[in-house]
Image (tube, rainbow, N blue to C red):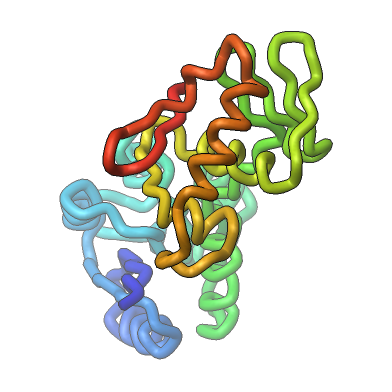
Length: 229
């Protein structure tokens, strides 16, 4: 079951808060509503949401002061924050954005626009996937994934396609024991009941090719193999 994205809605006007809550929940968000800035600060610190939708004109602690406090705290500084206010002056918008707000929506607004802007902010805040590794290395062993090439020290060592896949799997899972049946499935695509001696044969060949680095492929007796990084 997927966890709902939780939004802290900080709005002291009941009608506006209700409209926003209804539209956000209809889109699948979980919404917690508070009406005071000081209460919002307590809530956000206690249980940080995935996004804060914040009015600037608030009792207890105004929106700019609340934003300033949140952005100074390492535990809350990275939470996306969208400001929502009737104050349309450019200076308020600029101050809010300079304090670290991710977006600024002036009242009156379309609830649909608010939802779309929130989704856009959440997309931008989503952690970027790291690019795939271009090579794997350990000691003198360097496996170039793009070029399908193994180098041991400064020497290029030819590998068959199967040997390359086997070494790649072992190096990607360095430090973790790989059973023979798991390797048969992940490298050869075989069912697990196939004779596992084919794994042992390929490991022996890989060790010969790794030469002085051969001990990086460790045998775990009765289980399988482990690559030592």
